[in-house]
Amino acid sequence: MSEPLPFPQSSAALSLSGISKTFGARPGPISKLLGRKAVSVSAVSDVSFDVRPGETFAVVGESGCGKSTLARMIVGLLKPSNGTVQYRGRPLAAGVDERDRPDRRHLQMVFQDPYSSLNPRWTVGRLLAEPLLEHGLTKGRDATGARVGELLGTVGLSPSDAGRYPHQFSGGQRQRICIARALACEPDFIVWDEPTSALDVSVQAQILNLIRRLQRERSLTFVFISHNLGVVQNIADRVAVMYLGRIVELGPTDAVLNNPRHPYTRMLIDAVPRISKPRRSAPSVRGEVPNPLNPPTGCAFHPRCGFAQADCRTARPALQEDRDQRQIACLRSKQLPQ
Image: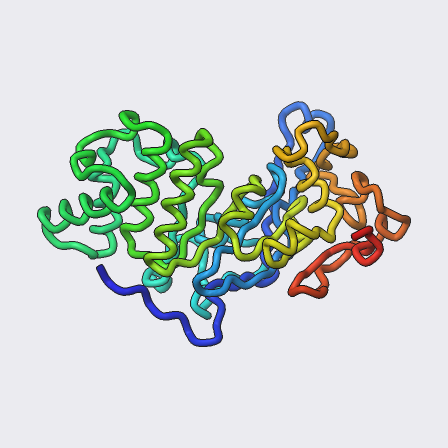
């Protein structure tokens, strides 16, 4: 197994600068008859952050806030409408680009649904052998088979499982296969797109323990996408909170989750059940997530915010540096009760 490539000194492992993604929404037949025109939806808007070598950087938010779209832009499965993605200090092009091939091998992704991300017609051995052969990491059937067995053993499966098909495994075992496939390319950076959300609680704990062990043993850098704040608190060094495609709060995980300074972050934390206070009544959530086809003016969260004032409806707050190495996009952050 080759050693991971060293990151440039005093450099971020990954840098996103002004990343945005807009999708076009074509009108259906009835809408066309009514004279409605095509519209666009902004899934991710002006997102910027750096990920330091060796850290776990988490991105959290409600479903539909743009987390998975952001993850796919990081690994090149989607092309940003605006902005740049830099890995090891070099910009990456979206899609297949031979110039990025050496970097792409070291930048891998594990998806949310393990079953849909595995080809059901291929054996596990073929699934794991494909990246090895594609990148020329092994030569010959014997060497490839030995490496496949080693990868399966690394994630807690048996080398004999190489001859089985994905449908013959449980959900947790399939996620282990997906992790083994990502490790086949000998990465130093992995993007995890809600890797435990489709699993039951006991299996979640096993997969999280495996993820932490791999990071410790291989000095890996992670971007961890999740909506589970409990998982994020246990695994992440820093966290970014997204709402309707924008980051509204970013900082060290303990600081953000123990003392949130954006009303949306407070809403997410207050909605988490507490074993220590089983009878407490969680505050009601005002309204619902706005329609991304017609987002609110000004601060996107103002229709649901109990602290909103007139200027929140007209001015969109920028992400500003605050104390405790934190960034917050809120006009009322300094006025919120501590």
